[in-house]
Length: 569
Ligand code: ADP
Ligand code: MG
Image (cartoon, rainbow, N blue to C red):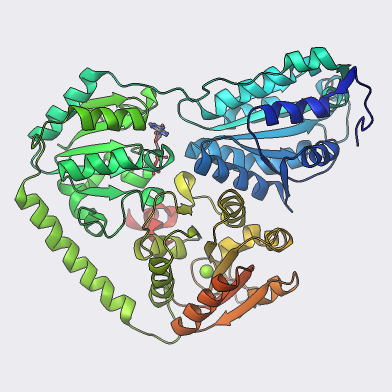
């Protein structure tokens, strides 16, 4: 331990980092120990910060990122230099893309050697390497700047649109000693790091006027709206206006999926026909076809509520931008609304209801079929029903078909309970998100994973078992990426690029760490294994055999496959 018996007048960089984090309410660090940050992790733990140690930095970073999303405080990921730093960068870049507040702190090698490229252990110019992928990237070069460095990192991570921040601590800085009094004075407690951003009242009026004139208005709720924790104001606005809403994936549950104004089951209709669309914390990115093309009405007008002024007009002209934080903004909308001012036409509401009913009936037929072997529909129906009984559980969901079907089938009933591949469509968030959610909430987490998706972070089941976290993993095992029945066209014995081990027993993996493994082949077995696992509160993995022919290549994203594009031309 560094300076365990430090004299009253001297401290060191290790202590200062821990003091700076504690002073700012950081209570958990996610990381992987090693040179030069091992003692930093030990000291943080000794000083009362919870330390969760992972098997790979990417998962530690994903846990930090999702804890940032759930708590509005930056999630902290601690890594070693160069390779460990780079492993964490995927998670940090993903946090930036998704707008999750996170700080990756990495130790780094000797600046003098790194800058002259003289070949140090784990040599890399980490601060500059991080810049293109982060909201901000800082390096602390003097121990007396640790306090300021941490404060700047916190402000950058949580203010405005949140994001990933990199903070570089050189081995020299953390090992340096300095006078205790000077050290104490150098610490900074940040004040109001995510200040409210009150919208211009004129922008509220402009938006209300546009919505009041609409024949077929629609609200799209994004994960920015979920992040903002302005649930009551959002609900009040939606219910007072009666406007149908569409939740983006991670905004599901902000209003319950079975809410009568939900237009999720009539998505194609409402996107194509809405004449005024109000985006609340949702970007017009690929997940909404950039607001263009055959999915959208070319004449639709937009209201966009966002904290980031540069988001406006990024893909389509926005007739009524409202720049502000969602809490302040939705409260302003609720106060400004006059009774009956916004009233969607009955014909619009009826058309949506009809479309919904048709789609719900079609889906019910699929959900209630009981094919043998099991397919995605029947397996997800079983999971959906368990969530209906236990709505405060977290759902982590990744894969291709597992993600697409999971989003449509598993209803969410509470805000911020669905955590998934998000803006990038990244694979590998599964175990990191599950661990982060379990750590910050203490609540059960069910991770519904494609078999390929699970593989990216699967070793973290040891972490889950080591910390006794209430995580149940359901692996949808169809023996492959997308599906398990692809063939090798060369005639050699090698499996096809998308094929994984047939009949793999993922359930046995968790048994190696004293977790509970289940292997199920029908929906009844899945329901029982899941409810039993949840009742026990112990880590469990349910290997769920799915028909290898079920699923489609690239899930719902077939249009993004270059080959599909070539074939179409
Ligand atoms: P989704 O993928 O669910 O559509 P996005 O991540 O694309 O959501 O969009 C979220 C948007 O929310 C971003 O443009 C971001 O700037 C915005 N945002 C995030 N937090 C807030 C907040 N507190 N207030 C207002 N806007 C926010
Ligand atoms: Mg699969």
